[in-house]
Amino acid sequence: MSIESPVRTTMSGRVAEFGAALTYADIPAEVLDRARHLVLDAVGLAFASTAYGYPAVARDALSALTEGGHPVIGMPDRLDPRDAAVLNGVLIHGLDFDDTHIPAVTHVTAAALPAALSAATVAGASTRDLLTAYVLAVEVSARVGIGGSPGFHDVGYHPTGVAGAFGAAVAAGKLGGLDADGLVAAQGIVGSMAAGVMEFLQDGSWTKRQHPGWAAMSGITAASFARFGWVGPPAVYEGRFGLYNTHLTGRETDPGAVAAGLGAEWELMRTAVKPYPICHFIHAFADAALDLRAEHGLRVADIAAIRCRIHPVPGKVVCEPPEAKWEPRSDYDAKFSLPFVVSAALSRGRFGLAELADEALADREILDLARKVTVTPDDESAFPRAYSGYVEIELTDGRVLTRREQVNRGHDERPLTNDEIAAKYASCMALVTDAETADRVRAAVLGLGTDDGSARDFAEALRG
Image 1 (cartoon, one colour):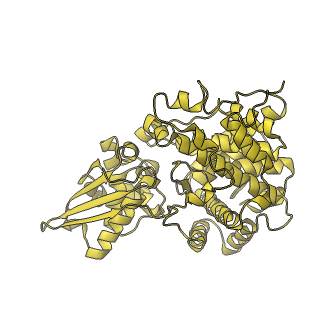
Image 2 (cartoon, helix red, strand yellow):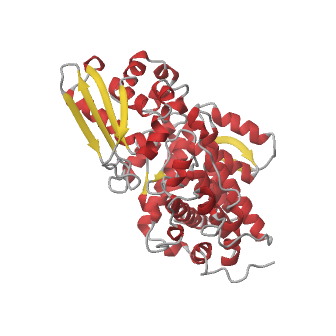
């Protein structure tokens, strides 16, 4: 059964036309170069995640379901291609240190790369095909997120799990040889799989770590269904019961954003790389706190009160419920606590993975200081265009110090350079492997698409 004339008449049709026609040569050199560095960042984080316990749990759960021969990033295991995509998503996103498309509030690479990697390997594709599909997935996921931003977070959906599924479906479909009609079907099908609830914020549960990998697997599955003739609704975005009218009922949305500027504006270039392993909403606050500490030589004993201002939508994520934010119950809980991050930064003069270890979570100096943090709405916030932060510190001698970071570091207006990304990669790899392995993997990633290499060989090069 075929879909009647969907192309050019719906948002999914316009996306499909673009996706079906896109070639490696169509993508500007600067976009390809940045794409390689975003992949490098993700791969380094996947390796770093193997130092923690949660990847082994995910691996065991997936291994109990199926067997397969697809490589896993940073691990020696092999899984079914779809399950490998799930685990790769967990590895990339598990530390919450991975990139975020700011206007979409979506972790784009964490779903796009696993989907493209598995689909390209299955298809026997080249690394040029792989990189092209990855860029395409980022472009689609970002636009789907923009169309509903900031509503997804406000109602409790994690946009990475929602928007990421659509990008994954288009990428997997392209690598699987779907034409424009097939890509329309893949988007329509994956609309019934796009989800990811944020209840983990209440107790620091692990479910958010699953969202991008599940989005990748959903995209691969939807593309396969479309390949064999399954029919999906063309108006999956803008329809009466489409994505935006169901997930964001009664809220202002922009379905037209899904296809806006395709091929003319590259949303990948607006994707922010994180300087801290915490929720992106808190980065500006960490920078502000660290700057004030360094500039004024602050000690914890000097601080009487801390007042922060944040937009109400991200405030729900990183400031509520207060008790959980004052004393996080896990490292994942702490990543989403504005009071804890600001207090740890002021106490230790830094914020890295060490500040999320059990010892830091039990540090009474940090926890007592966190209870001095109060939060109010920020009328001057640039959210969702940027993630602003305002920190005001009242000292015991009566002085009041303030710092506003209107645009978070890593934003496309203040991007981390490719050299800074490479340095972050090196520090992540140093946690778990030797310099020779780090150099070999880096060369493979930064060489993506520069020759006729195979996606299978590339996937093998990323194994631990």
